[in-house]
Image (cartoon, rainbow, N blue to C red):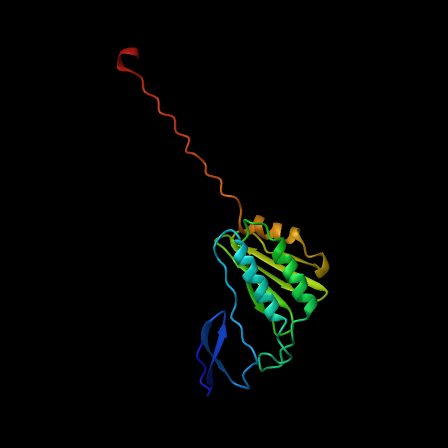
Length: 178
């Protein structure tokens, strides 16, 4: 989105990629792009990339966005990393985003709907909205964030595909045997 305000474009690097990001105050010490993984099934390198990104979030200092954002606490980094490691192989890694309130958000989007998981130091919050039906809201203690949340996301957004064979019965009576 373009804004009618004077701004500066600063180059940033992330995994040997250079991006130009506008900023309106002092540039942050480090800037990261969102890790996106949209292909079904987790590959080990996907998990490793996600874990690396989460570890990079721990390096954020106070006011990392130039607007007073809180740093990402090491406890949140640990809990988020454990959750990524617990994801079943059929569930892809989420989009990862550091939040200005010091939490980490994880997002999934499929043909079935969307899921948003926010991990804090003591609590997590989960929102799942399928295209059909009502939203699912869950929250709990971050320390208890485990495979049941991953299972819920997988069951609602990545249901197994059952290939139903067509049932067709063709009958033919020979004209001589009528």
